[in-house]
Amino acid sequence: ADEWEVCEERAATLSFEPEHGDVSSSYRSEMGLLDFKEEVVANKIHVGSSDTQAASLVGGTYVRQRCRGTTVFGALWKREAAGGSEAMWLFVNPDVDRTGPDHLVFGTTPTYRDGRAFHVAELRLRPNQPVLEWLHALGQAALTDGKVVDAPATLLEWRRAPAVKLLEEKSGLAVEQRAASAGPPTFVVSGLSGGTMSKLRQHASGGRLAILAAASSAAERRLAEALAAPLLRFGFAQLSGVAGLGEDAALWGKCEVSAPCRPPEVWDGRRRVYDTEQSNAYERAMNARPQAWEVRLSDEGQATNCVEVAPRVEVAAHQAAERLLRGRNLDAGATAALQVDWHVGTRL
Image (spheres, helix red, strand yellow):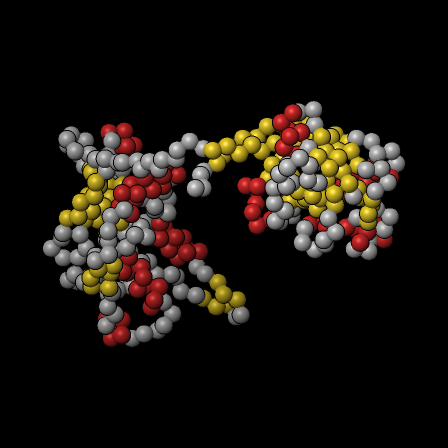
């Protein structure tokens, strides 16, 4: 049966000795690049190492394969079978995004689909020495004296991992739903630690916390995300209804507190201008809008640390209606006939 394996990396030095005089045209030469028309690469490379384990893993004689177009730069060498040794390949593993260097790797399979899981060793060439230049230098050594070229490498030793256990962290947090006489219910998050409540109270005003407001600090946002986690695990599938307007309440989208209206456009010939004072007042009103979620903290003297989270449907409804009606020039009857449905979902 298949088992999990983990990779342990170890540094080693490999030696590459090209067969003297046995060369073939390089990829750049085969592509017809005039500056590289004389460039060659070694056809047969003897790989060894003073490291016993490295020599046993990748040591041997590698012969360049004739196939083209299936591997990057046509650079594919296969180890000659000797004494029942495992099949081994030397090829280029490219950086697909072209944002980093390519790598020469040894692998038990030459296909890229298998990925790094079948790599045995990777050469660690200098940043200023691309793979093609290194192969060119090895080809030049095959043409001249066939001297040995050393290169640092990383051996990839794949070992069976210990038993993997998936642990689920159990939190003491709990969410309770309290029904309201009208409108959406209130959600109570209990089981919060004393330290968390102390931090929440630092950012609260009158026992209420403004989360994810326009002027919220980074600390408030982090606390809001931590508070939202148990709520996101709570089921909201059946929480929906129709929003209602109270007596003497402004029509949907017409509440200057929840949904301030933009200042009107003024045209000066062909140029559109805005009144500076009106624009500043509009910005202040936008920053002062009430939040769509009301968060109330339990008193410091209470035995249970809890936070009440209540959706304020009328705030979100006014803001949504204002965006919907903006620029449509509807009459009062059409505006009064607007109906707003609400639904509490997991996108808090």
